[in-house]
Length: 454
Image (cartoon, rainbow, N blue to C red):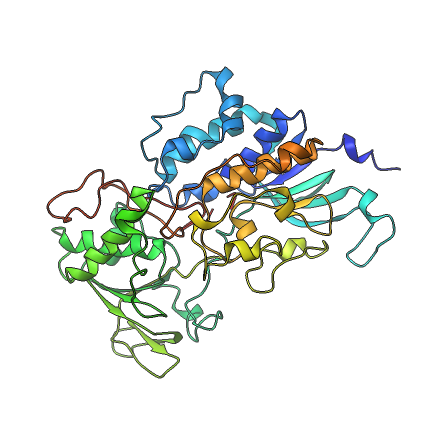
């Protein structure tokens, strides 16, 4: 039986998160047929896992224009543009309604397990570009499925693969055996059970981005609370402390993002956290007396025992199901080769990455695109606006409108750091915070989530 003409097939979008659903909205706006495959049972499944965290971008910057256009006939009204949603708000008030409008074009419980060319494995050249993509997935009950596609937009994010504590990029010795006391997410201290886990205890926070800032600020708030006596954090940095350690501060064009770094600085300055610099974790050992954890550095240093460890060292893209495709990825960042020099975290924050689209995101395997947080590979500096611009450009290209595909329609905020999460409830500065939190702090797309579906 012959396969249908490629142009008659849908465009498969992997992930029903912010950027995946925006991609679907732009495709619909262009008269193209999307099919969104989402591993979770609802839209924004990964976003919901950090529902307690506020974004550092307001509503006006996290709603895609094509999505808003698609939602308008339903009577949907965007929340006040200047207010800051939590991850839960974003999922419930925007992502789920958008997925509901798309209806049967979103398929839940469909975890993609492989993408290839129909009848062609990775090594076969003959007539390759003329073949449709074949996308295999596994449903929630374990059944396998397969769909053909004219193009594939992978917006599955990086949330599912947090980086380990080990300074070498590998798990530290003993890390896997300490999972009862190690977490890779910013804890929800509004949850009584989670709060009890950290109250009155010593916690090591490993990482230097906004997620680490958030965890430090959360723990400082807990230490100040009535049930938090004895709560203390040890902030472990692989580098030293410099002028840029705490981000853009008051100079940040996203005020909530700047406030986040200042809140972390206040936690250190006021003694709720101490710092250990130049420390690259090599091993995590159990203290024989009480089962607490001792972090051992590559240089042989042994830190005082802690009760808990929060590892916030970034996220990684899951490339396992793309192995039969010919992707041109940077050897360091695991991002598209043409995009990688623009997003190198050693040189760029999210505000210094110029808007980009289909040209930077294309591969020798025509018709496949990594977008959203996944397009950044291991780089942490991603904003929702960037992802929306990416998929606008790709949808225009797939519709044959190359002029629109190459047109820039985005201006990004400048300065600061862009990876991580934000504070949940700091609407205004108070005397107690020393004015460090002039706006609700927030979370970058995909972090601490770093967002399947971003």
